[in-house]
Amino acid sequence: MKKFISEKLKEMLDDDSQIDVFNSISEWEQSPEKYLLIFSNSFLTDNELINHAPIIRLNSIFNQGTLRERLQISLVDEAVNQGQCRFDVTQFDEQETYVTGVKKLINQEIQHGQLTPDFMQAWLNREQQSSSIFGDGVALPHVIDKSGLNRILVTVGVFEKPVVFDNQKVNVVFLVAIPYKLDATLSKILAQVYDLIRSITANSNIYNNLKNYDENQGLNQLMEAI
Image (cartoon, rainbow, N blue to C red):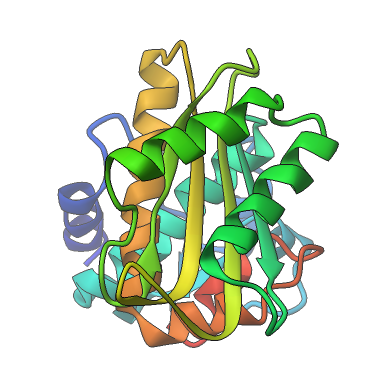
């Protein structure tokens, strides 16, 4: 059974992923490794190690869709923890339009020192060239970031009620700032971010968790109820 579970995980994870199997909690506690995901056939509620990675029921291995969604969340969460990605969520009030909402997101990041003022014009120029509305209520404006910061920036805006832009409804905006110089590591993280965005928009439970996002809890809160 251990061999079967390990093989199932390897089918879905990167080739360079490490999978360790422990026969007891005491063995696990002695491991010096930091794990991305922890699988268990029982609920672990009293062990301090559960604060370092989400605990996932073993039966989820047989539901590849659910496991893949959890993995996508954990990968981006780890990138955030490593400082290679920044993920912010803003709840828009009912007065916001698509344009004013995106401007608000950009201005917030400029104030936080994450974007430079020229990013605003770069976004406006891109909107004139092609629409960032991808259907199903999702807008995905993505713009090259010349701030010099070595990270992927994802700033999300959630509308209280759908707004209309370019004759299409918009429920949520994922504004992605992509560094001008993109190395192999950041390219991989960018792909993981896009995978996560697809999961959020395709799974109503994850999307509902996003609408109630608590900045103090981190990305793993998106796993609740999936």
